[in-house]
Image (tube, rainbow, N blue to C red):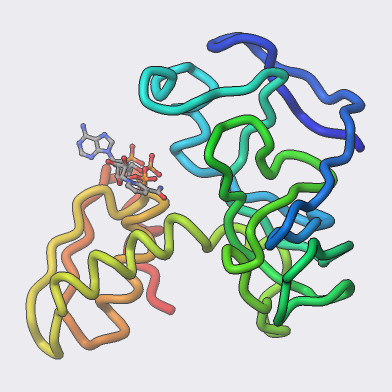
Length: 187
Ligand SMILES: NC(=O)c1ccc[n+]([C@@H]2O[C@H](COP(=O)([O-])OP(=O)(O)OC[C@H]3O[C@@H](n4cnc5c(N)ncnc54)[C@H](OP(=O)(O)O)[C@@H]3O)[C@@H](O)[C@H]2O)c1
C-alpha cells in the first residue's frame, strides 16, 4: 500500500510503499478514504510522546479515519466488507496510523458513517469531537447558561462551541480577532 511515514522524530517523512496490514482477531482492515489531522499527530511525529508510548518505525501517523471496510478478522461481528465507517486507528503503539491507503483497528473503534456526511467530514470527527463531547457531558451546559470556550477555533473547541450552542447555551468563543468570523459560525 501507499502510505506517509517518518523514519525519525522531528524530520519530514515521505509517501512510500509499505506492507498492507493484516487484521488480527477482532480487527478490521479499513480502506482509508479520508484521514483527519489531529493536533496529537504533531505530538507523535515530533517525539513528544516517546517516553510514554511505544513507537514503531517507519511510523505512519494519523488517529482519525473514514473509509470502507475491506476485510474483517476472526470474531468480528457487526461490520462487513463494503460497510462505510469512520473512527479511530487504535493500537497499543504508534506507527500504523491513518495516513495510509489501509489501516487495521479494533472493530469497536469504528462506527457506521451516516450517509449525510462525506468521508472527509467524517474523518474530521472522531477523537476531537469525542473529546468535545466528553467536555459537554462533564459540564452539562443548559439553555441560556453562559459557556466560555478558550481555543474555540481549534479541533476540540470548534466542536465544543457547536455542541454547547446546540443546547441553547450562550457561547463566548474566545479566539484571535482574525478568527472571529469562524468562531461565530453556528450549525
Ligand atoms: N484534539 C484532540 O482530539 C484532543 C484530545 C484530548 C485532549 N486534547 C487537548 O485539548 C486541547 C486543544 O486541542 P486541539 O486539538 O483542539 O488543539 P488545536 O486544534 O491546536 O487548537 C488549539 C486552540 O488553542 C488556541 N490557542 C493556542 N495558543 C493559545 C494561547 N496562547 N492563548 C489562547 N489560545 C490559544 C488556538 O487558537 P488559534 O487558532 O487562534 O491559534 C486554537 O484555537 C489541547 O490541550 C489538547 O492537548 C485534544
